[in-house]
Image (tube, rainbow, N blue to C red; front, side, top):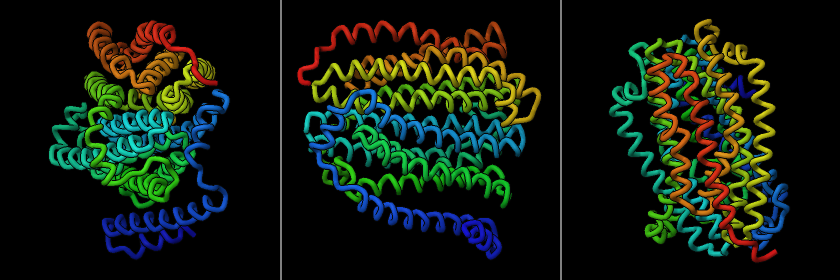
Length: 497
């Protein structure tokens, strides 16, 4: 029935532009229906959880069980998000090597949006969780509201400036002349959706840090599945080519935003968003930004690193850019499993640190590190065995496969060193150790990676491009380790059972 409705809209439209408008309106109509049904379902199966019950859940549930409970929805969300990112790579890859390279260029642009969005989201989330743990709901409301409205405003500014200066921006991100036409069409839609994309990061992180990862999962997965379907429909069926991938991504981001916002407006959260709370929270903007600075640093340097990587790979042709783009997508998909469990640890760490239950913070860290190592080890071994097939799945080009396969193997081997580094960074950010968290965030994507990329490419050429991220991961591990040892030595004993 759904496909018949879409087909009818396309047949009756005078042109593709009108169809796109119809498609967006139809998707929004579906969202409204879904939200209505979700509200009915929630009202029937759940009673409103008061603050005391949530406090007991976060401070008394066995740590391992709680992290898994919060980590599974987050992992599913991240996997779906990465699946639809990989769907973009797959469907756009059918349009040619230059089009496939455009995905990597725009990925750097999306990293900029993520950098600012996660700064507000993680900054607010950490504060909200710690204040709820300390039973200070008023401060939690203020922090959440100021982060939400600030992210919307920042998104509007980035959208306007990005569209106005898209050509120099995309060239700065590493676009070649042959990739540029594809990248401009794709980037326009990504920039158009920037405000809701960035605000969604805030809403998602506040939900996670409250311990309501399942609600966050609903918003992200709904948009993710729609994007996968939209890619197939708009690229293959209606032949909108790379613009179809951009439209699909923009629509899916808008729908995720509406679903996540509904969770707050319908009273399913402890944190209350309002203009009144925004005004109260203005003095907290500095604290929100400082707490979220590690995320801005990590994502911002990731964008710079992607730009440098694309420029370095671009010296060896579009196949090199496409190959590294595919490898980065595959590795991040695998890494998302460990990262999802780690993000299940973040609210546990922040909430219990605020409640002064330090022993639970320590237990949670070692549990998360161990589970992350086990999961990533299994996935890394599988990836090493099928590296050629994985790269070839996205682009059946011998040169892309040759370059990508070696880079993939190098990064998969280094995957074993990532869980500790990420757990360290998450811990410091969750408990409000902003300076240490910011420094550790800067290592993998910037302070270590950039010099290694520049040095290895100078002396080893394309091989340096392929192994630079792997070398950076290993070095970051050995720098992060002493930070964690010192932190746990200083951490006080649990004051309450």
